Amino acid sequence: MPAGTRRRDAADASVRDRFGLRVLAVVCRIPPGRVATYGDVARMAGRPRAWRAVGNIMRTCHRPDVPCHRVIAAGGRLGGYGGREGLKRALLAAEGLTVTGGRVRHLDAVRWPGRR
Image (cartoon, rainbow, N blue to C red; front, side, top):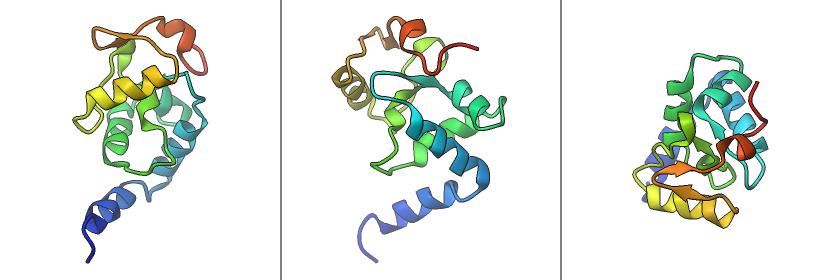
């Protein structure tokens, strides 16, 4: 088995259920330069109280076509990014977002799709 195959298989297994697929579909719709919280994604995926499940899906998703870096914790905190917070910060900065002190600044202006 090639190196990394087992890790990809495990990540794919975590999103084989319908909720996981809905989460990925929501995350793929977040435009560049915008963010959504784990709770926002859970709500849009149909399970408003499943923010931890969203976090687990994001943690195990290693698909380059899913912009997991655009999903952040409540209050604008960066949250985890597989232990690579510096990379998450850099990806968000490359999209024009300002991150200060571990938080996305001007959250209300960059939150997608806006607060409900």
